[in-house]
Length: 279
Image (cartoon, rainbow, N blue to C red; front, side, top):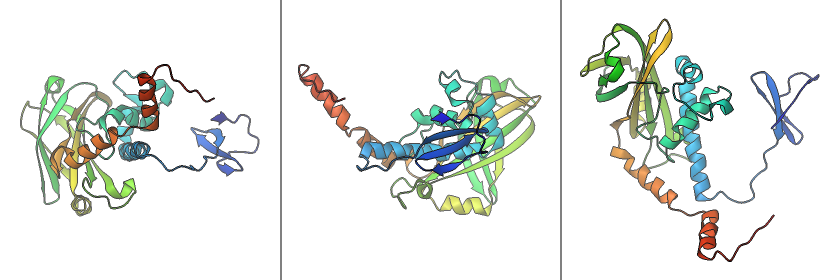
């Protein structure tokens, strides 16, 4: 993508002829208009696009919460060789970190809602009653050593349809609900900690509209408004199929489909004296 310098025409954005102008952080970039594909996408290609679509929606939902976006942008706690290429874009970091933790149609249980620094949480029970979503959890490691801390509690519910698709669009088959609540002077115990979020009628309606719900829970403790600890719990199945049975089977099937490139590489190994190169 080219960069436009000394643009005397003002800010350009959108399509102009065979070029597309985009503005990122106040700078204008130009790229060629994407060409339409002549050939239909192969099944592995389609699966990859679906996977990226799911991750994009997940990252977009996370970035809607300002404090979560700030954590991924400024308090990224894991060494990451590619971070400099992202130009501090939290959206891209979220996708890059969680790509190995996802499949075509589901997020794995170790998906990260916040960037991990230290600490662990284990959700033992979740109950939706009246207008409240209450959860019980255990903690270990450094969270136990921190007493009377100020914390932000984040809970994401990933809603999906594992057995059937409503349409070919990601947005129709996946939805995310993120709940945030702050607490002051929190002291954690190793077992039996409880916390509750408001869960209104609108949330309930969306929740009831999907056949599977996976919960991701995170705690961030602060000192002088700076994050001390980010801790994530493993995904907790609230309703639906255990271990994403339908999705896992579909993901395995797609992975076993060989692309033309893989088939060609296998043939080359079988007959190393035969080789074709087209430039």
